[in-house]
Image (cartoon, rainbow, N blue to C red; front, side, top):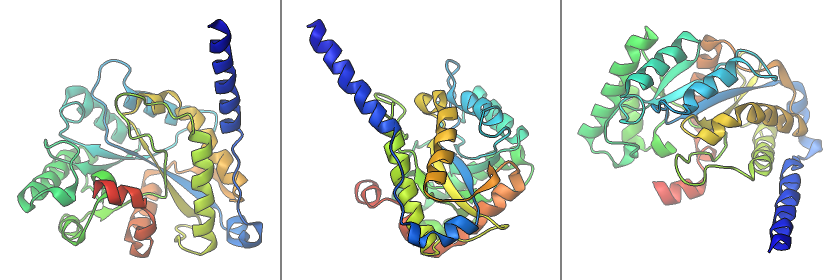
Length: 294
C-alpha cells in the first residue's frame, strides 16, 4: 500500500514538473511585430468582491498586486457584482470596493442585480435594466465619476444587451487570455496552469502576427482575466504574475519596461480602446463557452 502511494506521488511530481516546464511554441518567421511593438498586460478580475471575513481572496489579491517581485503597484480592472449576497452587498464587500478605488484600480460593472450570476442574454428587458441601473448607481459614488466599462456574466452578449450597455455609456470589454479559474467551490486548484498559459500565449502570437490587436499609447494591451473570488488564485497570484511575464517573453513578445499597467487612466483608456474594437470580439469568447453558456 505504501509503495503504491509513493508511486502515485512520484507520478504526480513528474506531471507537475512537466507542467512547470511548458513552453510557448510560436512561429519566429512572423514575429516582427512581436519583437518591435511592446505589449503591456491588462489585468482584469471577475465576480468580486469576496464578502467572506475568513481568508478573503479579494484582499489577498490586492496585497499581491501592490507588493510582488515582478512589479510593485500593479493596477487592475475589477468587474464587480455590486449586489451579490456573498460579495458586493455585504459590508466587507463594499469596503473592498472602496479600497480598490482608493488604491488606484478601475471599478467596472459585471452585474448589479440580486439575481445572481445570470447571463444578461437570459434576462428580460426589465431585469437587464435593473441590473445595469443598480450597478451604475452602486459604483458611481465610489468612483466619483461615471462607470465606463462592463463585462457581462459568462461574457455573453447580443444586439439587445449591447444596445442597453450603450444607453448607459458602457463599453463592453471581453478578454484575450483567461486563467480558467472561475471556480468558487469544489476543486479550485489549477495543475495545468503553466501549460494553459503557454497555450494562451501561443494563440496571442497568432493574433498579434495577423495584426488583430490595436496599439494604444505605443503598446499592445493584452487582456488577462482571473476571478478574485477564487482562493487558489489569490494564494498563487504572485506566481501567476511571474508566469504571465515568462510566457509572454517565451512567445517572443517585447514587454513594456513596466509590463503591467500601473496607472488607472492609462488602464481605462486601453480597455476602452480594446472594447471599442468590435472586429476582435469573435475571437475573444471560447466557442465552448458560447455553446454551453449562451
